[in-house]
Amino acid sequence: MCCSEGFTLRAEPLLSLAAAVVGEHRIDDVLKSIVGGLAQQPGVALARIWLVAPGDICADCFLQSECHDKTQCLHLVASAGTSVASAGEDWSFRGGRFRRIPKNHRKVGRIGVTGDSVLIKDFAPENEWIAHPDWARSEGIRAFAGHPLITRGKIIGVLAIFSREPLEEQDFTWLRMFADQAAAAITSAQAFEALVKADAAHAEHARELKQVIDVAPLHMFIW
Image (cartoon, rainbow, N blue to C red; front, side, top):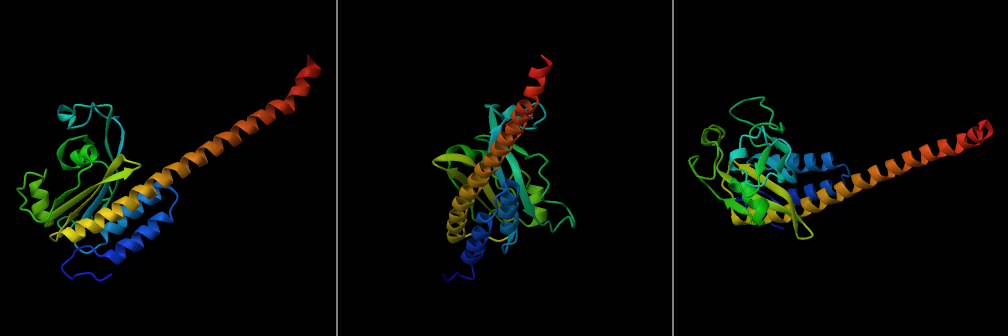
């Protein structure tokens, strides 16, 4: 597939990244591979994944006053990127102000509820979608793209990138295709880990049962 030089995202690297992600089985490895690979694409400053999970830090969340459903929210589970304004700053950090985002709040929360993707091709730091204009200005952020992560018709999270280059419709389309593959890989890894845990629990139960069986004759003799 031929790619225009005007595009920030390239089809071939995204296809290679998708193949690499599918090869992972642990959920942490899958998430790190996704954001790490996207952060290496030309122009991409920051890549992040939020997954839908039960509300857990509502009392300490700075967005609690804007959260109308505390049963679930979007948890930041993976982050990767490189700062140009603060050398050495760790953008893999999953804490900070946006470690939790209420559903239907701001652009990420809206994507996580409606399933509608959001593309901001190019913007000024003062754009209403940007929560921290000073950060966008200092880091040279020019564009944003966010897609829902959907499995079997259910929204499980949001994949988003912040770019230092304008994003085109073709960039957006390729990222959407990658997001679909990423959602499948995440779901597969979650299922794999659940199976491993179930097998471990079964093995532990079998071990405990064997211990009971082994000592039962002695208990009967003593009785």
